[in-house]
Length: 120
Image (cartoon, rainbow, N blue to C red; front, side, top):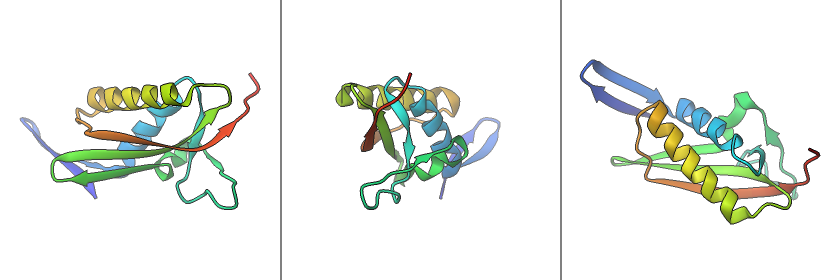
């Protein structure tokens, strides 16, 4: 599945993997995020953090009619306010996708897959 855009210069097709990689990169830059987790990795209470090249496994892009919905599976840092971290991720992802690709995102749903103690 992909997103199709028609501009004055022609037709552009953007794959969901590109959108999810950009969204994942924007999310991990936010304060309080330890990393991304795969939505299928949460088994037996363990979650594995994804590397930069695998961000698309932790982000699900859905397109319904003309609306774009993004589901993100993240791991947050211990001691941070989860609601604030989630709100910051939502804002950052919407802003980044709007400025980078020109897409208007209808919703960014955050799923917390774990809390980790970080050594800073």
